[in-house]
Amino acid sequence: MLELKNIVYQVEENGEGIGILNDVSLVIPDGKLTVITGPNGGGKSTLARIIAGVVKPTSGKIFFNGQDITDMSITDRARLGIGFAFQQPVRFKGIRVVDLIRLAKGEKKLSSSDACKYLAAVGLCAKDYINREVNSSLSGGELKRIEIATVLAKKSALSVFDEPEAGIDLWSFQNLIEVFDGMRKNIEGSSIIIISHQERILQIADEIVLVKEGKIDCQGTCDEILPKLVGTESAVKSCGVVDLWKGGDN
Image 1 (cartoon, rainbow, N blue to C red):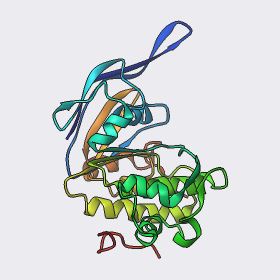
Image 2: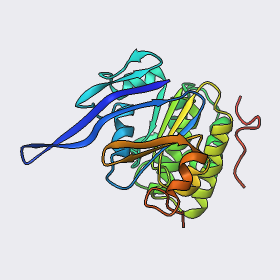
Image 3: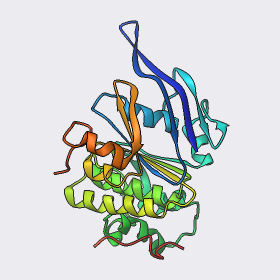
């Protein structure tokens, strides 16, 4: 279980502290897919980066399975089982896609055919990508899907996705919905957090958290919260996937 207690995050601007998050307390339950949503500039992506350890809160505490991780780096949190997919994926010159998946999986001898399952699950033709270098030859959308494939391979106890729909086409977006829905149905012993205001993603959530003006505005089940958001900035409509969840991974 992830628990945030009284999280405050401020940045300096013209010598003054500007509040981005203000006294945020939040519990993310185990075995659930939680979507954190809200209007642009409300603080939801900052909250994701604080959970992952990309930035540290100005004050407050973060606990993961009862352990205080407030001062831990993103690397140390990854070792504990917290996976994070950036809104803008990182490029790795000189590293092939298959090597990246092997690193995420923790198996240096993972076969190319097994690695291909994760690429197919995010809508990429595996034979076209498995040996490509993770560099500038890949588009932002391709990099996003490869990064999500590595998160799938890692099987983190807590997986955090920051606006996974950003920079990808409609066809890929439809595939990602199926991937996330499959993860939710097979979530056993882990949790998923998605930062998004796409209605299709909100529809598959177990829990929805609305962040506005740096605070938790409301939190509840999809049935409780989504009807309040439809048609607002917090829930906008979005303009053959391999079924990894039916015996595809050994």
